[in-house]
Image (cartoon, rainbow, N blue to C red; front, side):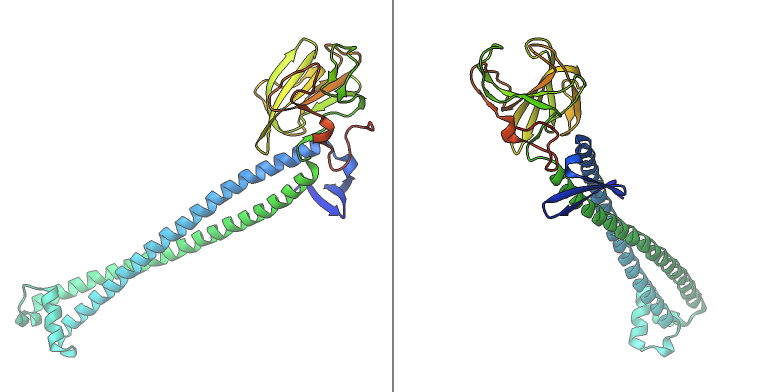
Length: 330
């Protein structure tokens, strides 16, 4: 059973966790991360199940080939026994057929030797040997039949498991779609202290390339989208800050998180959207505890006087489940 199940009513969204439901404005980044991890784990299990189904199918096919070969041997053996029966009882068979069988079984024998005791004993010995072979083949066929039944049951069970996982994956994708923003999520809870756009130049820049989200020192900061940490620094105007590179719909993006109190990630680390990366602080060129958040279309390229390749986070950063994790009004 899943820990969470998405239920939609019209335009509203509820997340059921156990027996309790939470509304959209109570959805947290942790909910998003848990759902994303469940989605990834289910996708991995599906790949494993597909391999199991294919393996089970090949096993059934191999057994079927063995069964077919055994059936052919049994028919050949039964035909051989019939030949011996004809040879040992020539009076009940067509004479020309008798001679044909005899010349096949004992090509060096003459027709007159068919009635001799020595020839009869030889034929009887071969008949007994063939009967034993037939008995062994029939026993083997029974074993193969039982093995095929087990293999078939394993194939059916594996396929049933795969179908269940596929249904689970579909629901998890719907849940993730309801939780996850199309591109970026707002990375912290707080109050907007400065927006994106032209600035006075008081702090050394005439264009503010991001958003400033004011909050208490220690407020969690989350990855705005899945990506890889490309740099972690602890000095300069940004103070302690982190760069994360993202690939979204074939487009490269870079997000920046500055003035942090504590950094909880390392360069090269891969992150899911909503995973914690550190805490809001007051380091670098900062007049109070806040997160400076930038979104660059492409690689990071700073400009103090223009937008450069940045975009307004308000245009691309969405809210979780339809309710903002930032308590400010914009």
